[in-house]
Image (cartoon, rainbow, N blue to C red; front, side, top):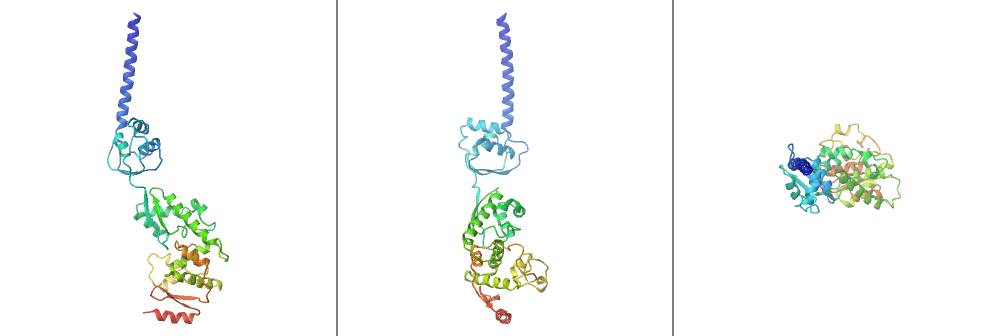
Amino acid sequence: MKIIKLLKLFMIIFIILLLIFLSLGLYAYEEFKPPKDFEPKKVYIKEGMSPKEIGKKLKEENIIKNESLFVLFAKYYDIDKKLKSGIYEFNEKMNLKEVLFKLTQGGLPPFVKVTIKEGLTLKEIAILFEENGLCTKEKFLEEVNKIESYKDYIFDDAKSLEGFLYPDTYYFEKDNLNKNIIMMLENFNLKFNEVYKDYKGSLNKYDILKLASIVEKEAMVDEERPLIAGVFLNRLEIGMPLQADPTLKYILDNPSYLLSKKELEIDSPYNSYKYTGFPPTPICNPSIKSIYAVLNPEKTEFLYFVADGNGRHLFAKTFEEHLRNINKVLP
């Protein structure tokens, strides 16, 4: 009698366990399938991510249903240490096993080589980021406007990141805009501090950068940079407006080579014909050559200069001489 009762008990337990296993198996089978609302997308798996972190990322991106099963099957297939970093394109639904083995093949390199040329503005750099698939230009401009997020990398009185994104060749990381911007800012600080350490002049750091950005836009040959810086410093010393076309062109959408009379009358602090001193911010991101020129200007009596049409400038001490130079270069 007792044996029959025990057999019944074992049968009940067996049936319960069988039902549990069947339920778990059915659950695992369903979780093994791709999400029904899957949408194609790219996912960046960073170097050094653990299987658990990768599973969580894929779950968040709706590539898989269950991150725990991802980890479990990675161990089951003995590939938990073979998952590789990179950018993966998931263009169609894949089950858990297919996703796992895709990750052993390695994704696209996450870095993009981009050259930021000397003298580009934030808007122009934003276009470069978009062209290289790093982010939209709108997202870039939105990020660089978050000044408080980057206060530790710019001057205390800085009103913009304009001027601080150092022109150089970079390997930018996809899907990490903040890190890319910090990379440029750190590069700027490294280069700027190296040339600034022996400066004995009276300009503060931000004004140095503003003037360097103007020199960058005016100079066409390197040897003229210190001379152009010297001319602008002479103008500042006597209270004369800088009268630099690039400061006004900075706020114009499609400026022509020669500014019109109407444009010269625009009431803006960037109009250096109307207002004395420096514009509110730098007008581009200058090279170290222009920064060095401002820190080490050429001593000169010149107050004026005009482009000669051949990549250089004609310099003058007086306005009358300047007018004669203008007549020389006019067609």
